[in-house]
Length: 115
Image 1 (cartoon, helix red, strand yellow):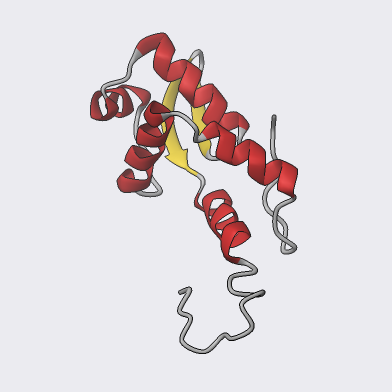
Image 2 (cartoon, helix red, strand yellow):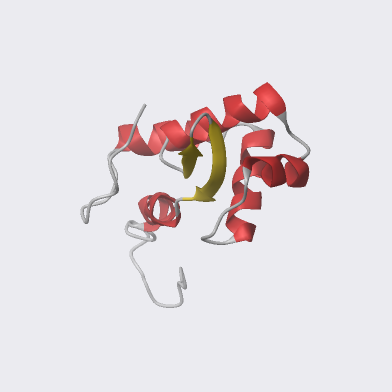
């Protein structure tokens, strides 16, 4: 499922659920974490595979799911993927989705630090 960039209103429950489902694999989570660690410049697909210990069709499969959820971007040159990077805005929107109503039903907001 392709996702539009997050809006100021946040994510719908359907989009959030789809994005979180894409992270429901230890290998995909490792791939995304490696891209987060690499920073906004991203990595070549070869370097990403080496860092994660996932290569070939398995990495391609995981990248397709992460890209479909809007969590990563891929730049292609001809038939080759030359660079992949984490989509920080989408990850921030997912985090905001989880925390947007933090402590809303607890009655007291003093002393709650949800950073």
